Length: 77
Image (cartoon, rainbow, N blue to C red; front, side, top):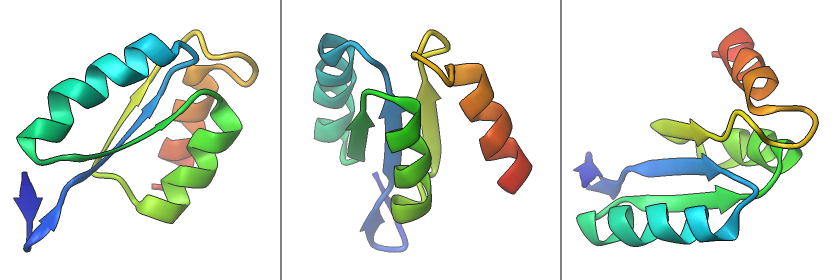
């Protein structure tokens, strides 16, 4: 998938590497550029570095949890 000639960036935050691999293996062949991380701090850092079009968060991330990360994203978007 491209937007203006670039791959669309997606950010996935899940502490389970199997989930990260599964979602990446489905979306990357469709043309998305997937950035994965396993904790909230990395998710917030990557959010500003890669400016993803879509963020998929595990609500059960270790502290801060995925809902807190979602609130932080909404506060700055």
